[in-house]
Image (cartoon, rainbow, N blue to C red; front, side, top):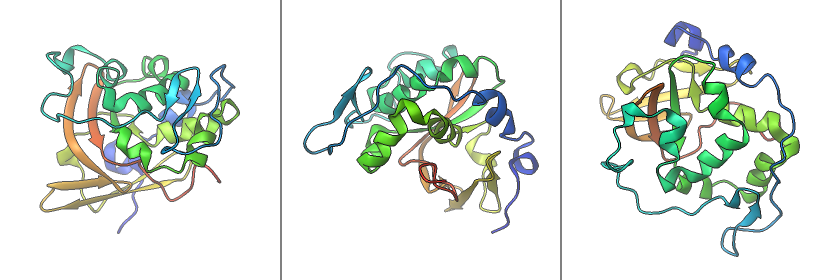
Length: 213
């Protein structure tokens, strides 16, 4: 598969987010998580128990009676309990304030179930206030700095981030199945006031490990 920079594929480069979006990786007052496992009970920080449990998902009615185009992305992901883990991580990274400084974006939102697949040790590292740079990179890989609909993705593309990470795009069944960094889009093209949301069933992975590199 040919690797192409995001600038070549999607007009803008994710460097926009990599510099102004996460240029300051200072520590937060949000506490980290202690060791444990999901079966024995989630551990607790100032945002409550994380990661939050998965619940039944109605993909045709994600936000109740709300018109998604009347709300920004961070408001929308706070409206559905199945996005609560990603919403909590976004809050830790001050995502809402950073989005205010950018134009329309595309965001891949993992469900709570997606986070249940992440080893707890890695999740603890991600929520540790000493690891805000890693959290910034983790959030960054789920965001494109312009609005991209699902029909614009194809298997000849790969996303190259400002951190020189490669995110592979794969499409099957004439575009009916789309994966971004191994995460399948399970609900696409949800328009928000400041961009578009694609719901994914896993964490977006890159060619480098945010926890070790």
